[in-house]
Image 1: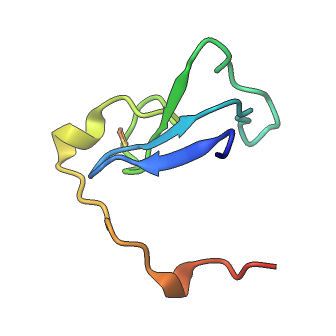
Image 2: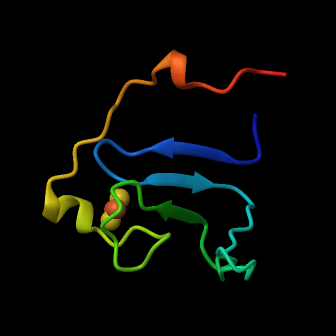
Length: 76
Ligand code: FES
């Protein structure tokens, strides 16, 4: 079993479970140590990016729920 898992919520955020470090574009580590689970915004409308703040529900975000195998990175 993987130590870290990333799962999309239907029409919602990516849920990350497990030990992971998240940084901003300036290289600053974001405080996530006290969170057993992290929700990253997938809709682009959160006021607290990169984290989900629930706005996806208010805007009616519709996610592509099926993985497009052609968009996957090739395994090396
Ligand atoms: S996915 Fe929840 S606010 Fe964007």
